[in-house]
Each structure stands twice: as C-alpha cells, then as structure tokens.
Image 1 (cartoon, rainbow, N blue to C red):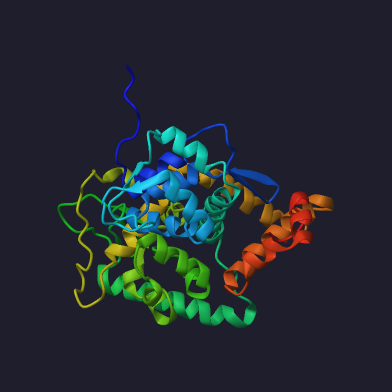
Image 2: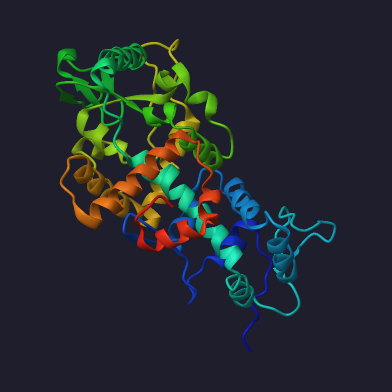
Length: 363
C-alpha cells in the first residue's frame, strides 16, 4: 500500500511543493520571451540568503486578500493547534485526507493564487536578477569627472586596506615586485575596485528593496549615499576577475588565477591596515546567494539574451515590431528603477490587458 503524501511541511517546503512541476502552466511574458516561473521561484526559496524570510514574503503575497486566504484555509491546516490561519510559523499539513499533490492541484485552480505567485516571481526577475546583471549606467560628460574621482577614491581605500594585491586570485600589481615570501602570486598591470553589490543600487530603490527582502533584513543604509563606495562594499580584483564577478554567477568562466584557491580557504583582508572597513560578510553572502539562484534557475542565460537585445536597441540596430517590444521592455525596466509606478493599477486596465497579449507596451 502506497503511503499517503500528507506529511508536515515547513512554509518553505509547502511553497516549493506548490511549485513542483505539473500540467498547470505558471509563466509570464517579457521582452518577447516566455519565462517559466517555477525554476526561479523554487531557486529563490532554496538558495536565498534568508529562505524563511523570503518564503514569508511570498506567503504574504498569496494571503493578501480574504478570498485567497479562505481558499488556502480550506486546504491547509497549521501544525500548531493554537495558530490562527494564515500564521505559517509552525508549518502546515493538508486538511481532511488530501495529499500534497491534491492540495497543489486545488491551489493552482485559483487564478488569483497563480497570479500572485507569477507577479512575485516577475518582480524578482526584473528588480533583482535583470537589474543586478545589467551594465552600469554610462556617465554623461558632466558626470564623468565626478564618477572617475569617486571610483579612484574607492580604489584607494581598498589599496589602503589590502595593499596592492587582490587576495581573490592572489594577483599583485606589477609595481609591487618582488612578491611577499611564502605565497605564489601572479601579476597584473592594474587592479580594479569592484563593488560587491553594484553601484547602481545607490540610485535604484526597487533593487535595494528587493535585496532587503532577499536578505531578510534592510540593506538600505549599506547601499545609499557614500556607503555605496564604502570599503565594506568593495574588493580589489584584476580586470578579468572583475568582469566575471559582475555577472554574479558561480558558473561564469573564471580566470585561471581563481584555480589557486581551495574550498574553505580563508582570505585575510586588512593586512595593510585594520583601520579600513573589511568586506561586509552580509553583502558577500548576498552576492553569493544571488549567484546560486541564477545558476540553479538557469535565469542568467535568458537575462544575458535580454541585455544583448537591449544593447542592439540602444545602438539603433532593431526595427519594426521587435523594436517596439524591446523598447517597451527596456522602458519598463528603467521606470521600475525609479520606484514610482503602481503596477497593480496598470494590470487592472482592460486596455492594458489587450496590449499585454501583443507584448507591445509596459506590463
């Protein structure tokens, strides 16, 4: 006799179970492409910096109305008899004699619940994945001198902390020869100051908000104003490692210098001066967690294709309907960065729904 699948599940396990593959599609359209919601949503729940907090955020989205809450209440029962639904602290079991596959099937019959999961995942796709992988804003002529001064000041702080060496990859600037004794180093013409969380977060409130949800704590004060260029958000890297680091993905082809490290190896920052702030453990681990999510969901490949299309659009090499689609998606991404648009109102519009099918306007 087959054992019934009606075991106790934590909130994270409950949501991952709901997202398991089945015949009901969960997807959204963006940039003339269709994105499957399940891989990124599941990867977010499994690999984010604070999985419990992120699961709580998704749970809040699917219980944000009485109608959705009442449906879930009929299907799920809190494990703790004293918990009042929709409390998720003690986990859930299916009500009656239902199994988890039956619960999943019933939940996915609700258009409102499906729409909540899709919207939540789409927001992370656009406000975190796509934004953090996008190239930095190119300064205007009037901004360039200030940007150059700020970047050079940022790099000097990192030199003051670590000396003329990139601990990641053990790379020295050529001018520092001979190398310190006892350790094998390679050499580079220059070392660059790399932001752990991109500089663009300073002017992108939606990215900071999404990062805070992902981290389970506010990162606002770490990434605004002068703090974005604080050494706590910086590493010295040689140019090839810097380029790979910006994509935030563990499976990026790393430069050969990375092969010098062993798993579990400890890197000691601040060897030149302990008075300069060390790299933030929180920001480093958030960066790593984003990389895991991008890798496990295969989202980085799709995003790279989108960014390549945007580059073609900006260079004027697209036309016709594809120009409209690319331009609309690009405009949405830029407007989202301003954090000033009510997307729920936009989705309520009947005319908007008609245009969304054509994928020719902001959605």
